Length: 158
Length: 158
Image (cartoon, each protein chain N blue to C red):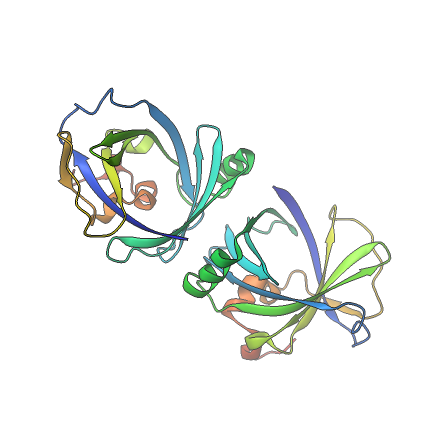
């Protein structure tokens, strides 16, 4: 188990491009239960199963296990409760922290945001020049919601 | 992945007792979604995470992974969507097949049934003298339902 403390930001401009190569992610959810989401994910040729507890003040319980890639693909195709979310993840270090820039594909194409993981809620960090408005508390950006209500369906925009 | 073909029976009498020692199981469900149940289980000092697809003609997709016992206990206590189901499982071989006799505890105390796993739906097997009525198709006996609607609440009896 681990407590996960994440903050999420929109991009300000395109200057992050070229700082990292993207890795291909496909993921789906075996349930839509917000008290314990169960995610199946492939990253390149690796499979993962992840359980996350409810979000409480930006922290949540998280458990992640590697599983055979065949199992992961089969669960995505046959058991996923929601459309599969696809993205390219770009991992960019900046002043001692790791930023993950997610560029979505498929039904969420056009959406790009960045996440940073902290060790404790009040931890200080520098904002890279390509980082824009914070959206940590906006539930539309939860990956589980991007499956149900993808970016292409948003009426109100970012 | 594996296809699971199970048949389930009530007990006819007590003559199965003493044929095997019981092992202590505790299990809960991270969701109540019948299209993909996610079960956390401890068996003695071992932890397991199991995903099962929908039941179709007595078969279903099943994936099981061992996880650290600490994770399993924490998920049972903090993330389980339902009351924890506890039972003693007695594994009894009979004429080339393995019978699992589940003797429930807690909210399901008083309920005992036996399961046999087959390799294909029409496979022949002998019924031990302690086996009674078949209940394979009765959803009340699904372990996921025994969490939500335990035996002590059943009005109509077996």
